[in-house]
Image (cartoon, rainbow, N blue to C red):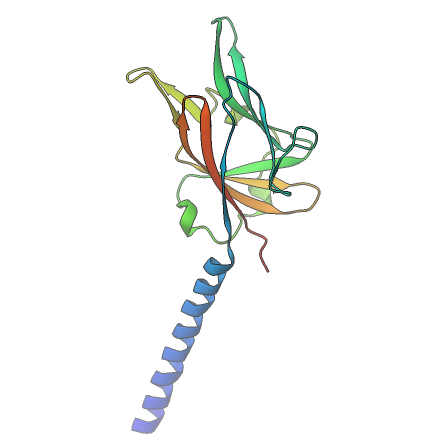
Length: 172
């Protein structure tokens, strides 16, 4: 009986060890790309996630100033080409912990919620400290042509420049 119990215990430990290794392998395969935009006050910034390029002709994301209706002011804003990508938002998991994309049914193709004053706005203005802040949400971008899914986190806004990071979740 002791030998069976010992063998069973080793088998369970082996299975648990394999699961940990699988999770570590997945996290090692995810490559995070860091990007720093140009200053939105000097030029519009266009980005293509699929090609990891700044590309004004084949862009998926645009960083530009958006005039706020009736205010006479413009605010920095991110726009996405809805003919090329859709999005989803994660308010629970941290960027580092995400290793798998969400269900395709969670993606939206209307991006007004990501714009300034939108429900999931990437950038917001804090009147109490007079500062533009980046959202703490993790965004997912789904490339409609290639079916690639990316996780995306906006890190910091400083004087018109934004730093963000993203990773392709379609690793093999």
